[in-house]
Length: 555
Image (tube, rainbow, N blue to C red):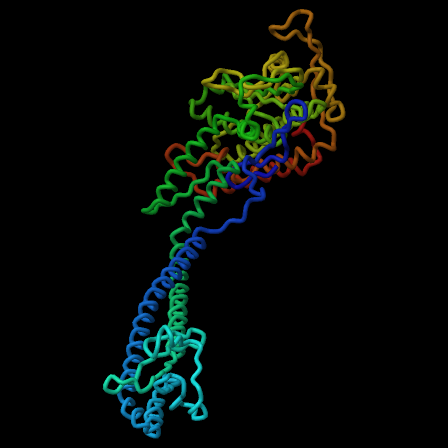
């Protein structure tokens, strides 16, 4: 068993009920359980922002660049048409006079414009090249598959996307007499490259801005969501059974509201589990069928423990002092019961009742676990009383007096299940063995552990016993006399487990917070004095653990 700093206990056992029906034990939330890979909200949000910015920028850039490209193309077409028309107007008289030299000179001047990649002048029959950028073509038939002379004639615009060119055609006429055809080709490649570069630059700038924004949003979101991790950690601790967990987060946003609601829930849960044994809740959560009314017949061991001299104690002390004393002893007993995989059924004034179910239908370890629990409870009472007596010599003010308890264990076939009504159910046991354990406990003296014959048969290899005279417990028929057995010693093999458990239960903090008083009357006791007394009690407890004597286990 491991007791954490908050006082919660993790149990190393698993419960089993009925025929091969297993009920997993503590913890209710398995922190080691394999879970799906988690992607933080900040990462998700950052990627969402990134893709939103990039998508928006791309769409906006495409829209703007499309408008720009359309306008540029319009201007380019207008320019090409103007150049072609002006050239045809200027060359018309030259073509009419067949002044080919001046026609060539006009073309050469036209080629000074970098975007004009080609220009051709053909005769009026649109067959023979009169002038061209390539002199070798002059006098040759004009061939261009892009131009349909029959449909178009020498007029209009042809877009050659394969070669990124615009082909402009204009008829050269003089006094309404057609004298030739002017063909000018303007390249759109530079404009296309420019638009492409602009697009890439826009994308680069967009990605850069998006990365900056994603980095800033990630940092800001991480800071904003950092308190949420506290809520997640708190939830896991609550699921692990640490019901004293509080977040204590106060922020003016939804996470702050969530934290406040969490703390309120945790406070109510902690209060609830002060009235319900955690092990019962674990069983009901893991196996919903157990929450239904009804029960099963099982071989169960029942333990009763009762304080001796409680009546006199309650008459001498205030109610608050009596409750503190009972709670201190019961806190030790609860740890013992949970360590040995039992269920605390109830506390009744100065008495405690616990029961131990078998792991399987053939399991008999429930009797052994019940007896080990009784021995550990008796040992915890011995150690606490011895430690108290040690500091009483130093006149230390105490909140707990030395006390004695008697314990009894009985085993039998009992009904285990939910008993009550639709408004309130108790996971409990009922049957003759419960009554027997209660009656035997009444016959115990200070520090004694008594058990019935069925329990003694199951633990003969665990403890040494002494048979006591037969008794007739109250409420039993005369023919149902019972032979009780007194536990007189514990086998050496089991002593180490008891000693290790007690060593974890008794700490300096336990003595400081539960046993020693922090003030006398209205006068506060100094921390140094309390630490000295607590260390003295702890040293006494360690001496008992480390000694070869077994008196603290069995008297």
